[in-house]
Image 1 (cartoon, rainbow, N blue to C red):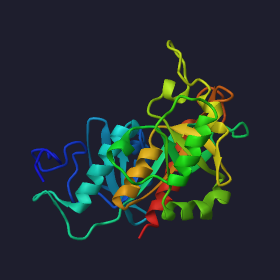
Image 2: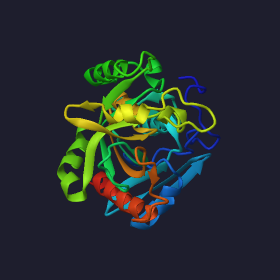
Image 3: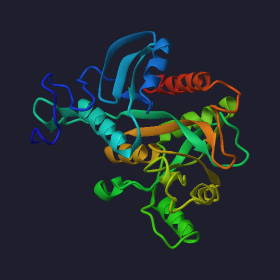
Image 4: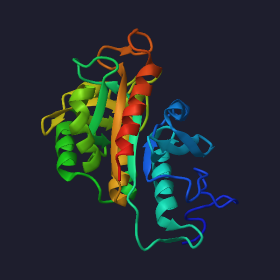
Length: 297
């Protein structure tokens, strides 16, 4: 492999994450907002490694005796791609030779994020587990072969009933390990299971019109009407679909838990409507995620 294909920093760490072999666990929590890495720190028994570069911030430490890495990825499919490829590489590529190890290690990625709720009956602060995720980013045009074809076809057909303007929809499922965690804990923790739309942007791609009219202002309502195998489209965020897609492509496991901080139908946000403080709700969700990851073999 040419050095330009997987660039390293002068100290031998990976170019974007500034992370070296031995500094990262195969149990990885991806938190999007780098500020949530600091929110996680008091929950750990001890921090063994820490680092970061640009918007990427990470720690590795022990939580109830299990080694876990928490990485703040920033926003969107492009950052998600960088995070997954480099986390995979630090485990599965001999960086000194630029060649894969003969035996590949499985990684476990759990996204902990925030999202906008779509279903009328959901309350701010609802936690959604993404059993499926759907997206319109362009990653599948460059990494072929990981989408759930029945889900993809069902969504594309549904979209055609709403508009004749096409989008490159694809769908993908959460991995078996995290689905089993959710099935075990959903009732006890009040987790809603459903479909998540991962938008390629925050404003118009989510149906928001600020100073320019969005092409699909009805998108939240349209997606709220889509269901698959008895589950509704519950929320909108920006990372889960590319996470699931790349994890499946690389042979890893991935899941996502998102806190509902806005309700798109009612126009409400958790930051303006009282109730549980957002930081307290997020800290609770981070602990749920750490408990799921610590049980990974």
